[in-house]
Image: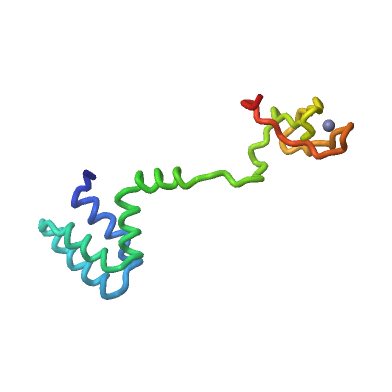
Length: 130
Ligand SMILES: [Zn+2]
């Protein structure tokens, strides 16, 4: 399972204090004081944090940053039509299947011309394709 030490919980809760409701913050501070005296109160703190959805999620993010970044990676999908990745090596071709006209973008973000034969907007060709 996850190797979370009580110290990590205390540290995370300490950082979350400003986000807590007054009532919850008082309880958390009390528990943290007991922790400083050597009591093991990490589970009590986690139970306390669970009472508030926002705090619970924030605590989870602080304790498991790796999990979150992995989730983000899974969620990440480039937006269609995002031109940021068009580089100097991008090649365009005419959408007409029989047309052999291709055009290489001379620089980042250069606008492709229309096919001189079919007057159609050129489409980017992926290097892997064909
Ligand atoms: Zn063409």
